[in-house]
Image (cartoon, rainbow, N blue to C red; front, side):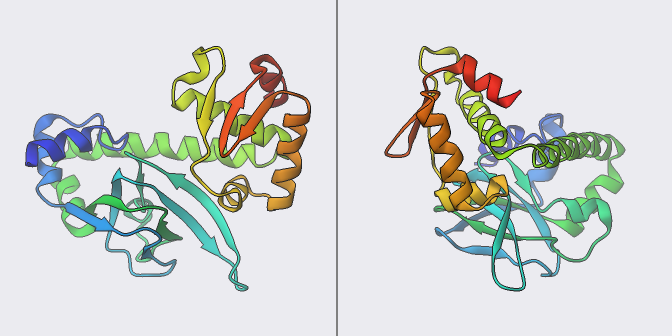
Length: 228
């Protein structure tokens, strides 16, 4: 059972460079937790106690405005980590909210024990820090994408999805939209009406097709031009 957990943790970008012995140490301090669909994991400002790896399901990380509006920062699926930032900023609070989007199994890593591991193992600390630096670069890239126009943002999102599922090399790349239009709009940082309008533009130009939540790329060359 523990060996199975170590194999799953190895798939997490945060842990992929760890040796078998180091993975064993990590698996020895944490544990699996099951969460039902739409269960709140923590709220922004809650005391930071540890971070998570998604083993099954999906999680959205978001901020709430004073008026209760959501701004989605990430929609995460296996084997992504989240809430690890306070480890490196010495913060005592979670910087955002996290909620499951479906029934999910998460691996919880308590902060005190993990910090002790990094203090006792410089090699592990270096590998984790390098992985976290890579994560920050990805976040910076995402922030940069928010400065481009919405149609380009949407095209980049579609290209990323068909890249992730490997269908980009097929005759008709496609993916299932596993989030609501509201959540996708929040992830792209736009109003849902703006998202719908720009998706309609891509459909009208016969670049993509959408049928019951399945988005198919009809003209990959044109989609890449939009994303440039």
